[in-house]
Each structure stands twice: as structure tokens, then as C-alpha cells.
Picture (cartoon, rainbow, N blue to C red):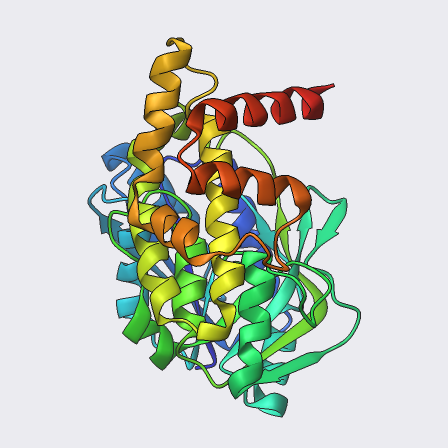
Length: 340
């Protein structure tokens, strides 16, 4: 079998689930299995899933009932059950293109790639991660894919490689050794791709649109993140710190700059909007800066780094001198200017 398609679902409206399964049923070749894992949505919902799956007699579907553990653990169940040479991931409220499996099989056979990155289309309009040709990255050149994933410049790839695991096929034996980080509820897809890029020797990026992403109430992060932002993101910071220390040392400055971007965005998302005093906000900024991910970036990055624009150099100077009062003012002014 060429491909195992893994689809987790948790209370996703069945009309969306049916739409996704229909798009998989319409594939031009059938050399795949579909593994649907319900993340503890309840007995009634699971029965509805069973009815949807039972009428698809022309494709190989395996439906699994799981306990509610989150998307990472749910995908890991699918990974464990997968029998294909390659693995693909889909979300239950999107669709895949009819030629996805056929084209993916051709690319893997022709190029012997560990990962093939295809393109995603957003709500039927914008195509993201859109290269115009087939690009091959091997061994040391894979760091260029990492640069694109974490948005480090300069780099050879002039577009972003998205952190999503959708519109990709991964070699199954590599995925089974990496898996998703259980319990990670924020940017788990990005962490998975960072981890797996450290384990491969050949990656290709192709211009084909394989996946159609729809924005709706069930699309990834929403209210849960805003309600308890720092509880969600701190495990993500811990994972990033470990990954940054395992990556190519040539990427250090770029990874440090990415960490600083993450620090500033966390202040905007998690501190500025709080109904607390200015003094309390500044104290929280200090506390966040103490995280090992940000301390490593503050200590390791020089003011003269080519990765820093003038405004970022000023912000780094303030961080290095522990001038959080002025840094608070600067971030607040920049945010207001962007809102105008």
C-alpha cells in the first residue's frame, strides 16, 4: 500500500466530515487507506461517523474510537495503525484534490523523497506555499527548508513552508519514529515538521495544489488560546528551545531572531490587552523574558546581527539592559501604528 491518510476528528459537524471523505473517495487511484480516529466525541457522534464510513465500500476505511486526548495523541494513534509506505494527514473540515494520491505517488517514486511538500489553497482563493517548480533539497541543503519553515532570511526559498502537516506526504518509517508531542496544544504541527526535518535526507517541494483549507468555527486555534494564552504557549516554547539546540549551528542567529519575534508577539497577544496596571504588565514582561528560550536569544544574539532590522536592534538593546519600561512603550506604540 502506498499511502495511509490519517484523519482525526472531534465533534466536527458531520457535513464537513462527509465532504472530506467524499474528496478522498474521489481520488484517481485507490492505493491508500483512510484511518479516521474520533477523539472521544461521544457515542451518538461516533455512530454517525460509523454510518458515513460504512457506505464507502470502494475505499479502505478504518474507524477508531478513542478517548479525548487532543489532536497530537489522536494522530499518533493513526500513525501506529498506518500500513502505508507513506503517511498523509488531513483535517476533517477540509478537502483534498482528486489527484493528490496519484501525484504524490509519482513524486515519491520518481524522486525517492522522504517528504514531499505540496501546496494548500485557502477558502478556494489564495494559494499558499506556492513554488513555481519542483525544488529538491538534500542533506545539508535541508536547512533551507527549515529556514523557510521558521521564516529566517536570507534563504534560497522565496516563500514560506507552512507548519501544517496537510498537503504533505511523509515516509512512514520516519514518522513512526518521530510522532507528535502528546499534550502539546499549540503549534503542534510546526513542532512536528521541525522534528521530522532533522531526520530526513531528501525533501522535495512541488507546485501542485493538493489541499483545500476552509476557515470555519472548527479551524485550529480560536477561543481556547485567547482565554489562557500562556498556559497554551509555554510547552511550545520548551519544545522550541530543545529543537533550536539540536539544529544546525549555522542557523543560530536566525533562530534567536525568531525567538525574539515570538517574545514580542506574546507580549502583544498575552499582556497588552490585559486589564491590569502598567506596572503589572511590565513585571509580566520581565517574567516572560526569563524563559530559557528567550534568555538564550537575548544572550546569544548580537546587536550587529544581519538578521535584525533597526527597530529590532533597539528592542534587543532594551532587553539586554533590562529596560522593560521603555520596551513596553515601544511595543505599544508599534502596535498602535499597525492598527492605524
